[in-house]
Length: 285
Image 1 (cartoon, helix red, strand yellow):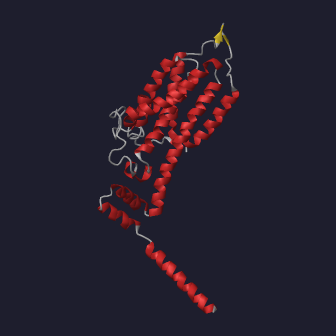
Image 2 (cartoon, rainbow, N blue to C red):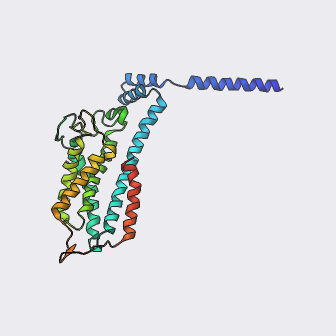
Image 3 (cartoon, rainbow, N blue to C red):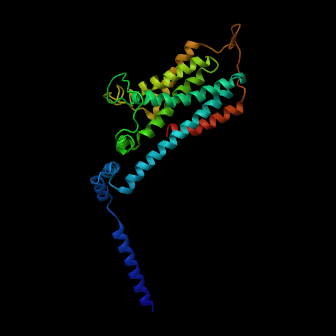
């Protein structure tokens, strides 16, 4: 009886192994067959398979890369709430509405202006120069833009993913300036400045490295860790220039003496700090 059970178990195990073995498909062959059938998307994954060598890993690599790009963009978007609450908490109560409106305007106009002119100016192609404006309203649905072909193995994202991520960065550069000029500039003037900064200033500077410009063409190479130059340095220098032109806040100096201008809400500022703390994982991650 025991021998019969043992033989039955062997037969069942062998049948299961045989069926599993015959059910495993060759991903390379399947992708190649799909390409021959006219499936353009399969061609993208075929290139991914040839580069990575393993179907499961290649698919996971591309999917994970895109997923993290979207999550990182969402975290950077969350940072704008942190900037708004920190800036509002550290300024006078009478200017709270002005501060909050500025930050909402920045993220709104940032996405729109970057879509209209910024994205194509940011990635004009290999021009190895200083300024190269792209065409208006980039075609994100063009050939290869919405598939793996856009970024290749190294980038592994679509044009849509790259656009939303870079649009958040562009808006952040303007937000850095917003904090520096708080209670120093009129709302209308800042709105004009922020629009130009996001639509033209950031994309041009970004193209120097990420768009094939002169920084990317340096003989010794140029390493821009986590946007330390393209985003942080650009936003910081823009903020410094504005502060030097505008001067101190009204009422800061009275009769040659410094008059402290305290923030009206430390709890609000603290919330902003923690939101920025969380957002940095997406910004620099």
